[in-house]
Length: 113
Image (cartoon, rainbow, N blue to C red):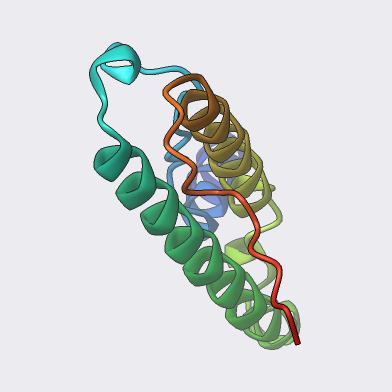
């Protein structure tokens, strides 16, 4: 009986997080990407990073409440942090591709003011 209770608690504790969605730094289509594609993916990755950051802040508030009520459902994983690092690495790769293809889409502009 104790075994079944322990088994159920272990299974339930796994429900606290969500599956990882880690983006690979290099993709098979990298060399075929146009400057427009590179820029679009870069912008999309920035938006994803912002969404994940907001999600993490929200989860931190939820985790405090769950700590008081049901500690088994806490999400203590680093899923969001790993996803953000992967997206940042991908964006670095996209910036390198942009330079290689001479896209000039990530070059900072200097105002004359």
